[in-house]
Amino acid sequence: MPQSTINLLENFADYCALKNKIIAQNIANVGTENYQRQDVVFKDVLNENINAQLKATGAKHIGAGSLAAVPEYQVVTDASRSDTSGVNNVDIDKEMSELAVNNLNYQFAAKKIGDYFKNIQMVIKGAVG
Image 1 (tube, rainbow, N blue to C red):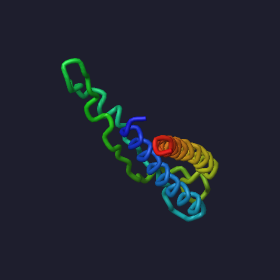
Image 2 (cartoon, one colour):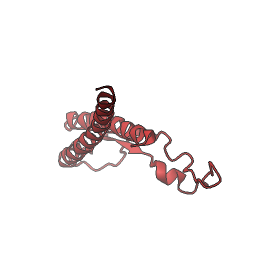
Image 3 (cartoon, rainbow, N blue to C red):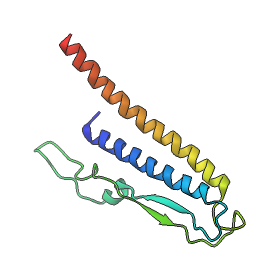
Image 4 (cartoon, rainbow, N blue to C red):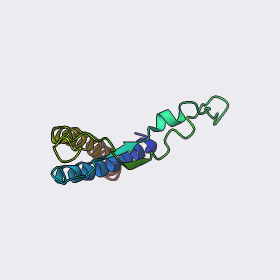
């Protein structure tokens, strides 16, 4: 697995950790009057770079430029005025389902990162032993 893939997985795990924190905050404030739910927006690196020109790194090589750049994500406030919970715009069912999906995404990223480093450890032990 290339290093850029590990960086993307680490960034995805960071995104999932922040999203989990925001979802937990939304759930905790489901009964708070006038609270506005928050969400984490993930800028898709591929979409940002889809029109970028590919750089040739050699006579027969084509590079992907900055496709492995660090993605950006930010916390945004949902300004919709729907009173889903009766006191604010937090829908507990939606938050709980997003929490479940987010946990699966985090587990996936953590497992792939862990597998990568286990493979490196096996190679090192195999080369030494």
